[in-house]
Length: 547
Image (cartoon, rainbow, N blue to C red; front, side):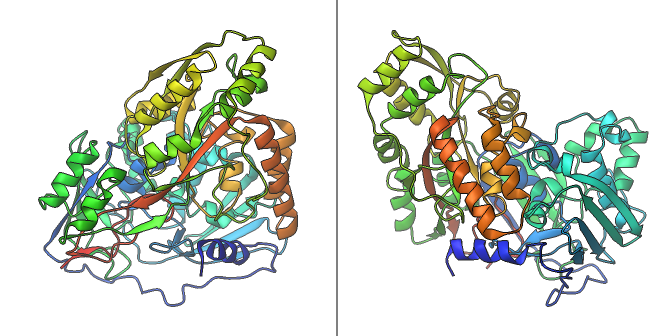
């Protein structure tokens, strides 16, 4: 089955327009009744950056998701390991009402929260934890949220802050969500990292101690690994969770993230056996990895997009003629050849061609420096203008070398009189400032989260997302109405039609310039077993062990 077929099947499976149904945890292993004995082995991951924290509801990148969501936490519904398919998580089954507005989740019994040096639970996971997790994101007056005031970009970007009208504890192991409007990809959305379930008891302990912000540095969840310590720019240490509710999933007793920003150093460490898994090699190093008999290199065509976001709230980027001029003066092929070195495909649309709903008829504007100059003159900038372009400080799956890309854009735009200054920040600060709209133009990208056009067209470009992952700060009502129309029906033909029309508007208005979809490579030692590339970007260590 192709990626596109899997995503289409997932979409069809999740349509709430079907009559009320239940999904049972058939084939799922029972909850462990006693602590397991874990293999006495340590797995080291050479990761690419320091997470800004572990409270993953407030983040949007795989750096935090790898270190938090998929190690410490679980969600009500989860994506199967290495797959786009959803399966029961902390909810062992659920029903959806015939009108698609009510979701009832039946929770798993016997799930334990982790015991750490800073928290010892007195009870098992139950409905109170689900209600706390979601109410914190939904209600600005919720006590913990008031004590630790942070944004929840995904929850907002997806429209959930407006669409969830009620979260009810029906009984200790049943929770009911009521929506204002039909949200076709709702089940996929709550399988995402931002929806990781927190301990209400731990939150209450922190609140009473006046240390609510500690939830971001000292995480507690129900997941496969227990947080032990974090030294920024150095290491994150985890222990395997012997009480994990999925028996046999935890294959090592210790998991260490060795934070190594430089990809060349990551590869040196891997070759010396100092780590067994590494993130994102440089394209130039791929032949070296393939030639090393001690290494393997899983790879997949990436479900991703690297692009240039124009802050449409700032002059002159608020002018569509200026954005069109910048777009058509980019020598995209040269950038892809130099930056991706054979591991990237040109991007045209705001989502990859493997995503259902992709409009294959859209084309890039032809590369035309003279026409770009004419557009700038028409816009009132005959001599060009000054522009600051941000370049990411770390390697990402959708952009292996942001600095080089920025320098090539600098040279391209100089030809039309645009004088570019390149800037950057530490990764967490880069994202935070981007969310706040401090940039003029920035290199950024996206890896799909749940296999639905809504995840690209709404999260990256919708009005609900202008304070989150819509780095273009673009709110255009004709476009936004189409996105909401696509989300608010379960009719496949109607959804596809709305998303096709939205892509046409995007191409006309150019809030960002798509550059490439990259192939994802993840080198590992050959003594690693059970490793799978996550199609949505984070690196996961469930079912991963050592020979």
